[in-house]
Length: 326
Image (cartoon, rainbow, N blue to C red; front, top):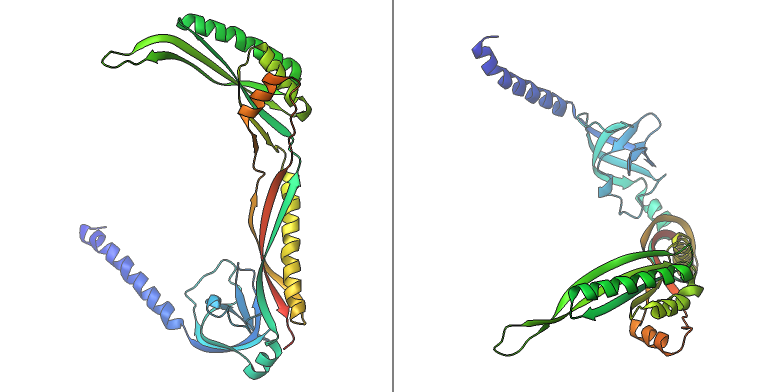
């Protein structure tokens, strides 16, 4: 290929594409279509099906809000076929409607005037017993020497962890959540700060499945050398079943509302058009006052602990069609 030929080759491609586009546009034809509205295998698609041919309605969303727009309604449309459009399944001749109306509009209106769409919400709250307790236990030591504070903390922390493991049992999870060694400073006016000692802190998290052992764990940790209970949380680890119950009850609540509205109009629910999960709120962990727990533990063991109940919430949004008597 010569240099001049290669230079003009892209221009030739563009010219061919332009000609092809003009041919496709030229093949588009004005058409008047009559048939019944039917759903298609295309996602969200509609066709107008006559006795001999199907027309794929490309702009169905333009007419979907009309009260008469539903499956099985006989319609008449004017518009243009679009041979340049290719869809996934190509179910019918692509057709873009400029007008679309039901056949015998007055009869259709009288037939469908008793139908209406109603949007409702359903809510549900399910109470459930927590199945997991999370206790944060801390050992705090201080000394003039950093090494002494560290060594004393290590000794007491080891004793606390062994005591907690012994009481909590094999199903418990014990792990260190934090460790710090900090100087304690003395600040005086017009003088540089001085170090008066060191503070060592080791925090341990104990996760228990057996809630009856929570009080005993706190008591034994205190006896072994723990001097701070930073937190006690009750939660639900396995919450799938309770969330499913909440979602099921929210769905029934939404349907009950729709049926109540229908009955008040002397009608009935014809079909459910759409259901959406508005959201499921997982059980919010229950935080127990750590200061109160520590004071009770220091007073007279065994420490009484009552986990109470947690709440799981769900919301469902539903769109239904009802037949109402005028």
